Amino acid sequence: MASDKKTPVLRRRELIVAAGAALAAPLSVYAQAGEDIVIGGSIPMTGVFAFAGIGINAGIADYVKIVNDGGGIKGRKLRYVPEDTGYKVDVSVATYKKITSQNKVNLYYGDSTGFSKTINPELDRSGQILMAGASFATELNDPAKYPNQFLVGPDYTEMIGILLRHIAKEKPGAKVAFVYSDSEFGRDPIESSEAAAKKLGLTVPVKIMTPAGSVDVSTEVIKLRRAAPDYTIFHGYVLAPIPEFVQQGKQMGMTTKWMGTFWTMDSSTVMKMGEAGDGFMGVMPYRYYYDTSAKAPMLEKIRAMRPEYQSTAYTQGFLTAMLFTEAAKRTLDAGKPLDGKNLKAALNSIKDFDTGGLIGVPITIKGNSIPVGRVYRADMKAQKMVAASDWISLDK
Image (cartoon, rainbow, N blue to C red; front, side, top):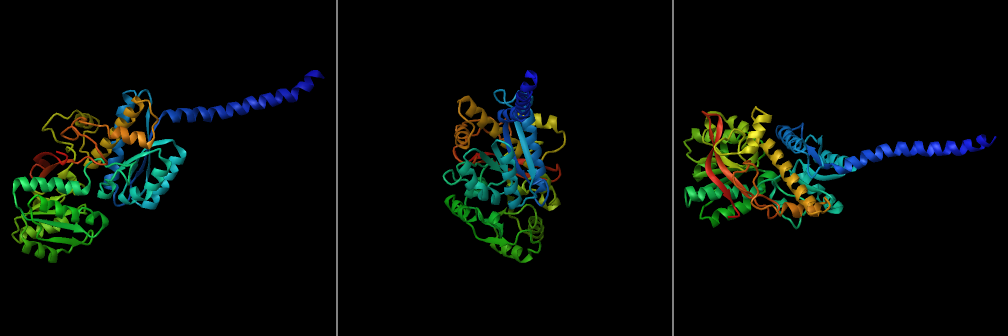
């Protein structure tokens, strides 16, 4: 009888032990996950920006693998959690909410200017995450307004600033035309770049705005020819209608030097311009995959991992993960928690940092951008982009 009386108590104990065991499993999983340093990502693997998203995704994943294969950061593993957004802001926001609710996210990659601006109040409210992304929008280069974000390269105004500095050195007093898309992306740097050109003693005889992706540009080409610029800078496009401008301009006997900014300047994009694109120039913040002109151990590592050409979007993703890792390492070295404020302070402590040759000079990150780049020129015969300038730093 006595043993019968004990049975409910024992049963209850057994149930408590069993329930404890059931709880312990997920808790240990969470503890493990808490030890991981998590990089979340709203990545455009499909849609109009997939050409970049696929490269970005591979670049981040490869650098995470390199770090983890080397033992992680202070014994903690990096974990990369990406989801496809189709390059739609509402999907990017939903993805962010999903990933951050299911994981303790420390670092995040965003896929567009629209997303970066939309999610900013949420980043500020939580204060837990440092974010970078595919945008180089000038507006984001403001540490007061965007304290938990940074750009992995120069902003769009700084990109044009690098081109203008090159022009002023190559041809003092040159005439520079701006051709840009009728979009937020296109308009972004134009006004401030015109002022920067004048400061450098350059003149801007014409500014031409076209609908994004428009193909019939014959009227605009005539207008451009009349202005007879020495240099023509395109911004706010990926490819179209740049080849149409270049082709028609050359047919009309224009001798202007054509130039572009980051999203036009991937090697595979420029090569699509064909013969007319020979000599096309532009700004690139990173070395191209095939650039062997100087020692670049990180590029050698990338080429060993991926023997086929990798886009400049891949390099941007890879470098983002490298800077995320460096910020996390410095924060942990200082014995501080991995939150947005500490990660950003660690990022801003980066001075004369060697990127393993991805950028050709040591970098210092004072605010929200890295205002460094180089002018490259298309060599259609070699099917490569070749250096047309030294590395130009706007900080110097």
